Image (cartoon, rainbow, N blue to C red; front, side, top):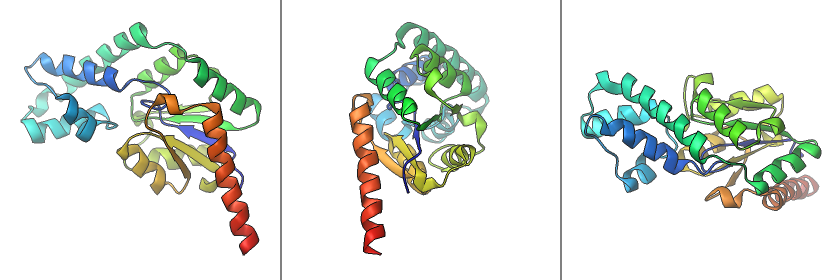
Length: 216
């Protein structure tokens, strides 16, 4: 099958925001004397929704559960402040999405972040006009690593999973992408997300599909 759509994770794929989430959460936790070390965030918490991070912190560091709501609210507030300060358009991403859109690909974002965060980041990065839609952790019951958000995106696109390419960067997101049945493009950071790289991955997938079809 030909690839007809590309679904992007956001943090670490289209937006270099991992540090932003780390800074915002630690600022909120610091109000009550708690903190997450940088290596902990990278190896344990990266890619998880804030609510899940807080649940893990209650288990790992005895964070009182009655603080979850307030800390989550403050974390979101701090995140939005950071977006205004730091989020800027990247030419390579604007070019990639504009070219793919012009070539007829459907484009979407599926993120574990909140809806406000996703919408603000995409707007500040000037990527909103190229997207068919955006999904957040508020649009599903189960966040990544559950595949629900990607399955919902594929359903909204009205496509077969094998007609979709998912671009992901962290273990939780990659588990979700692979479980959806779609093709996956793992990336290490936002610099690996560019037009030539995306088209190479699409070409490789389609060439492999033709080889299987001819062999059969």
